[in-house]
Amino acid sequence: MRLTVIGCGHLGATHAACMAEIGHEVLGVDVDEGKVDLLNSGRAWFMEPGLDELLSRHTRNGRLRFTSSLEEAAAFGTVHFLGVGTPSLPDGDGYDLSQVYGAVAALAPHLTRPALVIGKSTVPPGTTGRLVRELRTGAPAGDAVEVAWNPEFLREGHAVGDTLRPDRIVVGVPGMAAEATVREVYRPLTEAGVPLVVTDAVTAELVKGAANAFLAAKVSFINAMADICAWTGADVAVLADAVGMDQRIGRAFLTAGLGYGGGCLPKDVRGLAQFAGTAGAKGAADLLLLVDEINSGRRQQVVELTAGLLGQLPGKRIALWGAAFKPGTDDVRDSPGLDVADRLARLGAEVVVYDPQATGNALVAFPHLRYGDSAVAAAHEADAVLVVTAWPEFAAMDPAAVTAVVRRPLLIDACQGTNPRPWRATGWTVAAPFPTPDYPERSPVTPDTAPGSHQG
Ligand code: NAD
Image (tube, rainbow, N blue to C red; front, side, top):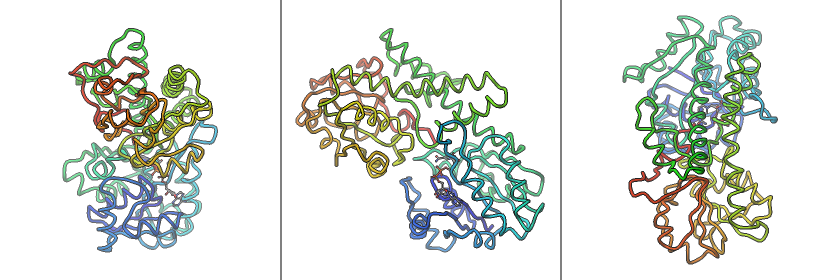
C-alpha cells in the first residue's frame, strides 16, 4: 500500500519506518525541513534504538521518503496517518490541538479524491468528529474523505519493537470501508498474532487517554506508598516487588522515584482530567488531578531533601546525574530530573548536569545549568551527587572513582538508580526520599524496572 505519515517526530518517524519495514511504500511529511533532510539521509533527529537502521535501510531501497509538501503527500496516496504533536496548552490545562488542526487544514485542499485519514496522535474524545467536519469542508473530495482513529501505545526507547509487535492495535472506524483499509495496512501484524480491536472513534480516542491515566496512577500510587514507607521505615523496593508479584497487579510502573515525566503521561493525565471536568465526570477529574498532584510533589520533595542535607544551597555544588525523563531516551520533555535541577539552581546551588544521551537536548532547554562531559567530571568538587535518571551507567559506577573527586561523599538517589550497598561500603552517605536498606535480595533496578521505563 502507499501510505503517508504526517508529523515525523518520535511517533511519526518510527511509524513511517515500521510501515516500510512491513512492506508498504511510505512518504513521511514534516513541516521542519531540517528533520526532513536528516530523515532522508537515513537518520532520526532523536535517539531511538533500532530506528536509524530501519530509516537507512528503507530510504536506500526506495520504500521510504520524506518531504515537507502536503500537496506531494495527497498525490502520493489516499491513506494518511496523522502523528503530529498534541502538547499541553501553555496554562497546562488541556490539549493544544493546533498542530492537528493546522495539519488537517493544510492537507484538506489537496484531497481531490476519496481518502482515509488515520489519526494516531493522542487527543481528547470528540476530536475525530470535529476533524471530519473540517476535512470535508476544506477538501474538494468532500464527503469522500473519512477519518479513523488509531491511537499509538509505543514507549520511547522501545518504539520500534512496540510498533512492529504491539500488545494490541486499537482503531475507531466510521464504517466497513475504512475498517477494511486499516485491516489491510496492519495485515502483516495481525497475521503474526497481534490483536486488533475495532471500535468507534470516540472509544478509540478514550482508550489511549485511559491507558496512560492508569499507568500514571500506578506511578503515583507507589510514590504515595513510598511516603508511608518513609514514615514506617519499610523498604518500598521490596514492597513493590512483593505487591507486583500479584498477577492482578503486575510489577511494571511500580518503582518509586521522582515520578513520571516526558512528552506523554503528564499532559495526557492533565488533558483527560480537564476533559473529565467539562464532561461532568467529577470522580474521574478529581482522581486524575490527585495523580498529577502526587507526581508533581515528588520533585519539590527531592529539592527539600537536598536542601536539608546540604544546609544551604548558595555556594554548594551539586552533580546531577541524568537529564532524560527516563533511561533509554534523549528526550527531556517535562523531565522530572531537570525540573529538580532548575529548582535547585534557582535556589542558589551550582548544578552540574551529566547525562549519557540527553546532554545536548538539556542544554537547549536549560542553558543556565552547567554540564559535565562525564559522570565523574560532573561530580568534581561536588557537595552532593544527585541521581535523577536510572541509567545503567550510574548503577555500574565505581564509588571509589567518584570519591576521589567530590568535596563530600553524599549520594542522593531520587530514582533507585544505584545500589546503595557499595556506596555505603566506600564511606558514602546515601539518602533518598524513602528508606533504602541494603537487603541483598532487593532486585537491582534495570532499564526495564527503572521508574518511568515504560512511559511513552
Ligand atoms: P513530536 O513533537 O516528537 O513530533 C511531532 C512532529 O510533528 C514534529 O516533528 C513536528 O515538526 C511535526 N509537525 C507539527 N505540525 C506539523 C504539520 N502541520 N505538518 C507536518 N508535521 C508537523 O511528538 P511525538 O512525541 O511524536 O508525539 C506525537 C503524538 O503522538 C502526540 O499526540 C503524542 O501524545 C502521541 N504519542 C507519543 C508517544 C511518544 O512516545 N512520543 C507515544 C504514544 C503517543
